[in-house]
Image (cartoon, rainbow, N blue to C red):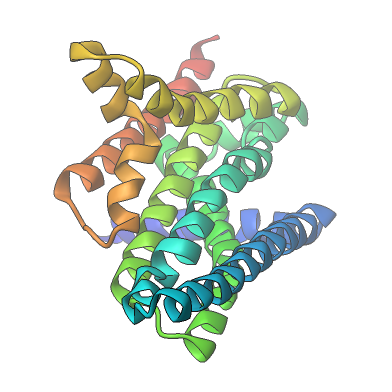
Length: 268
């Protein structure tokens, strides 16, 4: 029990260190600003397009005397779902920038040897760095949720798909973070870590499109490995165990690879 408490304290100390590391440099404020501004612009475009469609459908409803036409317009389908899908693309660019420094910076400054020879276990080091970035990403995503509050103030969207969509978005961000943490453990060059992490994340995105062009077993495998297919169910308001297992298994797999990579460096 005592060892468990000490391990938790060690991990919390690393989490605190990583969070402070973001905010003592311009990177945290730059990332938060970029995510908020870009997502805000896209949200405004979606909302403007939605209002334009309302005016158009109202005209058609009056012309054809069919009020049911307006029922086809749904905030969740026309605004929320595209907005969340757009945030996935933003995360693929942003998360590698947040994770590239986690271990690569330690290697560059030659502090990784001191860290690895400390009483803290490798697993606690990995978890500390992982959750330090994870909490920062949650902060960034919470800022985008402010735009959803605008929809609830002026409209009446469905809450269920929105909540499940953000749960899926957190899973996507966590998956990308685990990949970035692993690539950061492979090199002391942060730029290399960024592009390797970005390439893997982009691959998991585009193989979903490739699966639509491929039939048979290969198409099924590509579709299962794709981020978009699993996230789509969350965006529809469906919390499926298979989708959850997909994200959790990949996250655990890359955390395990990170731990293995750090431990192997002791023998080099």
